[in-house]
Image (cartoon, rainbow, N blue to C red):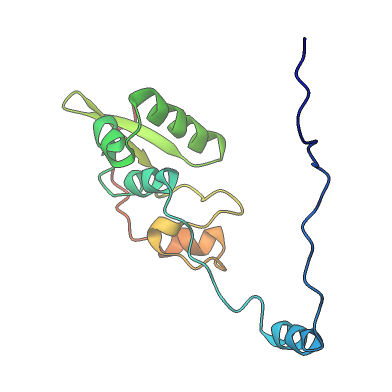
Length: 144
């Protein structure tokens, strides 16, 4: 035996909007006069961006330091490094005292359409201008 609800549900009812007042056209005019693109937003500080910042340091970063800075496990950091490579970043590695150091080659081109936020580049700059203005040491040792 099934139990029938005591009161039927009315799920199609929508909330009513308040009626527009006579002042709303003036308010719309004030809103439309404000410049929409005058505020420049800074990029969010994401873990992926923190990873890229660490890789762009002149000394590079080890896997353990990348894990500590992002809070990710080793396989997640390695996957993020592969993702950067697929996006066109020149992620390379070398070995120092048995520890693998990952770094982004400062001599390589920044991928098209991307800005080098870690180096403080202006978003309007081209990749060539960003590369030319970077102050990162080119000496990273042998690539393994």
